[in-house]
Length: 304
Image (cartoon, rainbow, N blue to C red):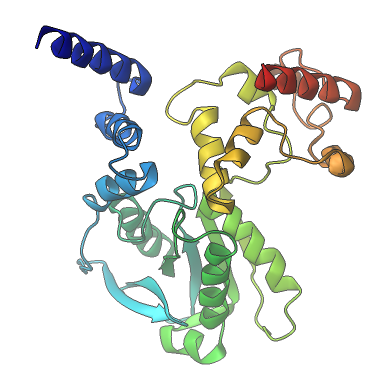
C-alpha cells in the first residue's frame, strides 16, 4: 500500500509539472487549458475536444435585444447567425461576413464573445452581420473549413439574398480573427478568381490573422516560445491538427523542419529582415545561410 501511494504521489507531481503553464493573472479560468492537457495525457479525450467542451459552456442562445434582431439559419447548409439592426434605414445597409477564430479546432458563432462582437458591430455600423460556423479539426481537416466558409460566403453574395436583408452590394466586407482571419484572406483571394460570383467584396479586415507556416522560427517564436496564452507549441498544435492527424508533422514544425529542401525558395516570401522594424527583429538575422544553419541545428537536436 505504501509503495502504491508513493507511486501515485510521484505520478501526480509529474503530471502537475507536465500540465502546468504559468498564465497571466487576468486570464479567466486557466484550469481549463491545464485540464485539457491532463485529460489527453491520461487518454481520456482529445486535447481539442476538451477545450471545445469548455468553450461550449460559454455559448449563448439566439436572442434578440432592443437594438438588434438575431436569427439562426443556414447558408448553403452551413450554420450562420444573422444580426440585423432594428432601427429603420432609408438606404441599403453595409454587409459584413464574419469568421470566428480558434485555431481551426475551436470556437462557434454562438460563443459569448463572438455574439457580443456581432451585436456591437451590427448596432454601431448599422450593418447586417453574418457570423458563420464551419467544421472543426481534429474531426475535419483542411480544406473542410475553407470549403464551408467559401460556400457560405458565395451563398451570401447572391443578389436575392442581399435583397432579402437589404444589403448594398457595393458595401460588403469579410472579416475574421486569428484562424478566422486566415480563412477570411483565403476566401477573399479565391473570390477574385471565381467567375461565377458577380458581386465582389469591398474590403477585408483581418484581426491578428494566422497567415504563414513557412517559417516557424520567427523572432517572436524565438523570443517567447513558452509565453502564455499561445506558446509556440500550442500554435504548432493548431496548425498541425488543421492539416492532419499525423503527429509527426507537429514535431517537424516545432523544429522548423516541415518544409522540404526543394521548396526552400519559398522562404523569400517570409523574409522578415526586410519587413520587420529593428525593435521586433531584436538582432535576429534572416538569410538563407543562417536559416539552413538553424534548421540543421534543430534537426540534430531532434535526432539526439
